[in-house]
Image 1 (tube, one colour):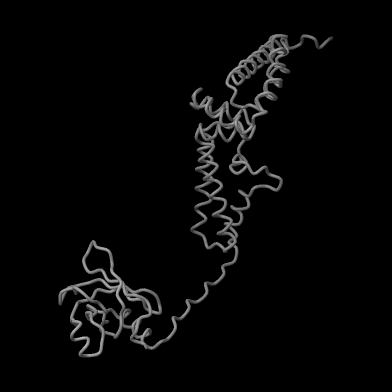
Image 2 (image 1 turned 120 degrees about the vertical axis):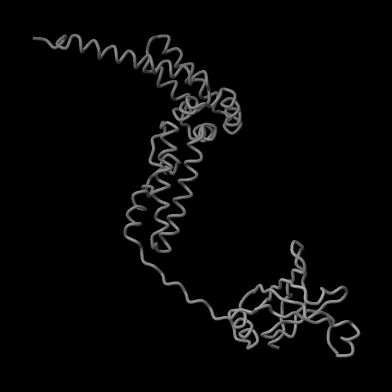
Length: 312
């Protein structure tokens, strides 16, 4: 019937204790009867009750106003327990109980109106969308080069996050909301990975990006950390070390022969296979600097003798 409750009633008898479950009956606009045996809460005690109404659970403060002992229950053909009265019931409580008693089903909330695409949000989302044919890396997500410095990564990730998260305040369509949250997740992952030397070095090793690893070494990745990451990487790529070694040996021979540009290219090919090989990260840097110094020297020579070799 309308006054019965199909689910257990949760009752908090004392603050700080676990709620107990009771069967409830005789629900009215003023209170409810709770079936119980054994020790009952004292008369006039305040208890917190959660009523399992058709429209959903409803919490209410009650006062114990009646005890029914097992003897009384037998005499009156009812269940033993205690009756509680709602304390200062609100209009909402009365209406919800009334609805439950009448047996009326809960009225479904009106379906939300589907919003159209927001033009300004679409412009921003489109400008940050990954282009078709993109490689899907964290660098692509942030629109950065693979040899970018870590501070620039952190700055870019913050800027993109700020720009995109501001769109949450706009009236987005459901499709735009979904795209936005997906983009924000990718931006957060990219920033969290590329902005921290240890995480970025692990990521760059798997990507075959030795220049990214070099940035991590500049930003404080220790030789010990690099060696541990390299062991982890080579366990996944056991053939990398042998293939890389061929390129490193070739590079060494070319460097000794003074063919620095070709040596640099050989070292880079080796480092793409074994990016955390610190000895050849160092050799690569040395040769790269030597080439830079040689190019600067040649420029200076041309500046001193601008007409030389041009003929009459």
